[in-house]
Length: 402
Image (cartoon, rainbow, N blue to C red; front, top):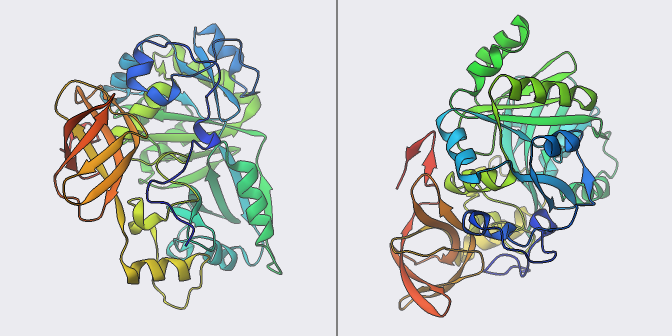
C-alpha cells in the first residue's frame, strides 16, 4: 500500500512558503513552517482584500501560491484576541465548489469517505476526506447540503487538483461541478463572533446567525453564512460576492473587530488539534493514521466509496501509526519533521509544531507507533528532550484540554 508512517516526504504546496529564508522573530517561534516566507514583494494570486491588507500594515507572505497576510502587528496578540473575543480572517483563497445534478448525492457517496446521506436538512454540514484508491488523503473538506445540491469548501492550494480528480470520477453520473471563483470568504472567529456580527448586519441576517447550529450553513440572498471554522472557537464563515468583501471587511475592522493573519490561524488550529493538509495529512497517509477515523462512515457496508477496500485492509491488519499530541515541558520549540523516539517501541515524526500562546508551552502533532503510551522524546538540535504524549487537541472553546 502506498503509505508512509511519517506522512508526507516533503511539504505540500498548501504551506509552501519556501522561498528566500529570512528571520521573522516571533513568527519563527509561533509559526515555524512560515519562517521562510518571502521578504520581497509577493507576486502570487491575490484575494479581493489584498490592497486593504497592505493598508492595514499586514506582513504579506506566499501561502500556496496566494499573497496572504501573516500578521498585522503582533501575531501573539492576534491569537489571544480570537480566543478571548473575536477576529476576522480573509480566507478567500479557499475553494468553493457547488455539486449539482440529479445524481449529486449518489456521486458524493462514492467520492467521499464520510456519507452525505447523513445530511437530511438543507444547511447541515459534515467533514470528510476525499481518498484515492490506496486510501491516501487527496484533500479534506466541509460539505454542506443546499437547497439545490451540495457545497464543498476545499483547501486553497489543492483546488485545481481536487477539481481534476472530481471530474475524472464523474463517469456517467448526472452531476455538474461549479467552481464559485466569484465569491470571497471571511471567517469571523471567537466566543463573541456571532454577537458582534449580528449587530452589524440586517435584522434578517442577524436572526439567521442567532439560529444557526454548529456545522450548519444557509443562504441569505447572495451570501452564504455558516457556523463553522478552523480555530477551535465558535464563529462564522461567510461567503459573499467578491465585490462586497472589501466593504464588509472594512466595516468589521471599523467596528473594532481585529484583522487576524495566517500566523495566528496556524497556532489556533494547532491548539485545537485540527489537521493542516500537506503537513498532518496528505496522499501518502491514510485517515486511520491521522486522527480522522471518526469521519469515515463504514455503514452501510454496501456503500463502496473510493479507498474503502484499502481502508478495510488496513483496519484488518492493524494501523501501525497514530496521530497524537505532544507537550514539551522544558524550554524549546517543537517543529515539523523532528524525530520522535519512543523507548523500546520505535520512532515517529512531528507533523506540526509551534509554541502555544494559550498554554505557554511548545506543542505538536506527531505520527508515532500505535503502541506509544504517555511518554516519548524529541530530538531538537541534536539533543533529546522528554515530551508528554496527549490526545491531539489542546484547547477548545477557550478551555485547556491537557
